[in-house]
Each structure stands twice: as C-alpha cells, then as structure tokens.
Length: 196
Image (cartoon, rainbow, N blue to C red; front, side):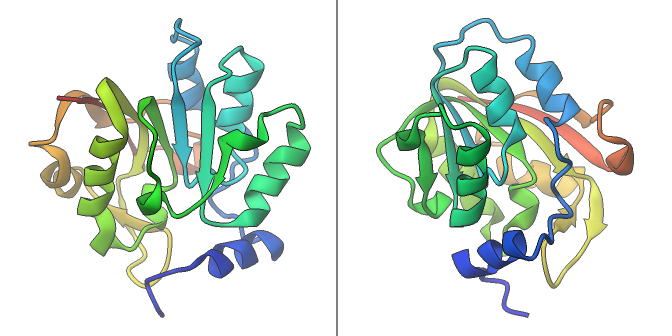
C-alpha cells in the first residue's frame, strides 16, 4: 500500500464510514485537560481534526480561538453542520505540513500522529515546534501499541517517541494515559510537551 496518503484517501474513509479512530465524543483525557484551562483567549489548533468533538467541546465552553486543520473536506463539512456557528475561517482544509502564518498557544493531538506515515514523525515534531508560540504546548495522546505497519493507524512505543522530541521540547508529562476510552485502555500515552 502507498504510505503517502492523500486527501481523497481520507475523504473516502469518511464517505464510507471507515472511522475506527472516531469515538463519537470528546476524548476523556483531552476533556479532563481542557477542563483545567482558564485562559479562554488562547489560540488552539487541532490538526488532523476529523469530526473534532474536542473542538466542539472547546467552542461550546467559551474557547473561540480554536482552529481545525484537516487534509479532507468531508470531516470539516461534518463539523460545520454539527456546529453551524463555528467561524468558517477557522476551518483549514490544508495539509498540516503546509500550514503557515499561524502561531498557537496549544495544539491538541488526538489520533493525528498515528495516521501519518511513520517516515513523517520527525517532520511532525519539527512542524509542531514551528507552529507553537513561545511556551506553547503540544498536548494529547499517542498509541503505545505496535498496531499496523502498512496502513493507518500506525503504532509505536514510548522509547521510540521520546527519541523524536527529547531535544526539542520541555517534557511536562509523558506517561501512561489513565483516562482512555475503554477500547484504548492501557494502549495510550498522555503527552504534554512545552516549547523550549
């Protein structure tokens, strides 16, 4: 299989309802993290946003500076229909690696990293560093599970991931995730990495 997946591949996954990563609600670890935030003016990015229940939760709780980025058109349309008052200019249909002209205080990771070709993992953390404002944070979950090698989702482990970002970010949290949805229990790591 071609590991360099394009917008059509992802759009077709949404159209055919092949959404194994979509839990249908805000992810508990990210909900718990968001519930601790007090600065509702912060600029937040959700890359590979998909149906983005996290963005909906943020927006409905007063965070109005939230941006969604997705390669495919269909999930952004789904989101726009579900949350019609969300600003259209904050829905970015673009390849994450081509995203420019923005600086974010917080980037939320939820099943985007595992969808990328593993050859792009170093680029992923480089791009995160580029997009984060001074003291900005990358927060979310990564699979701590071998998973697939020929198609998404791609897995990995804590040691592997650490090698990508150990010299790039201040590590605030990098440990087993204790609030995963039941089907992912024991298979996720929670990360909170701060721009250095």
